[in-house]
Length: 138
Ligand code: AMP
Ligand code: ZN
Image (cartoon, rainbow, N blue to C red; front, side, top):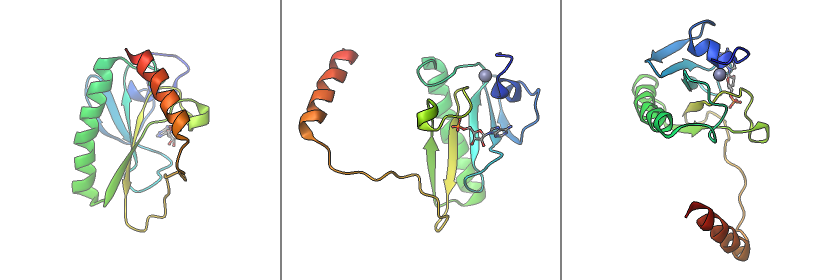
């Protein structure tokens, strides 16, 4: 537990939250600034700052849990779709530096846009990056 981390405190139950699920590894609670109705956060109890620090076991468990919570959101709220969002670093929109996944139920006409404008890429650059990453991952 990191003393100055709000999600460590929420996960440990030291700060109240609108919890919908808890087990020995995770707490899931409703976001206080919901992007849509039912927006919730999956938060591991152990402190990892971001995806780079997250261990494989917790990563696997987090996604399994995401499937369970997503089905509950669909069954209870009748959402028409759902975004899984996970931000790393301020430039990517991370504001709480304790790893978490957003589950954002989507509704027809909810007016929310998470999609960025995309344009066809430079194929030479795509191939160059492909090679760099393949080498890194070997
Ligand atoms: P991110 O910007 O990806 O780091 O997401 C942090 C999220 O945590 C934001 O959507 C905040 O609204 C949410 N948040 C911050 N403090 C609390 C809190 N005390 N209870 C519930 N959600 C929170
Ligand atoms: Zn923490």
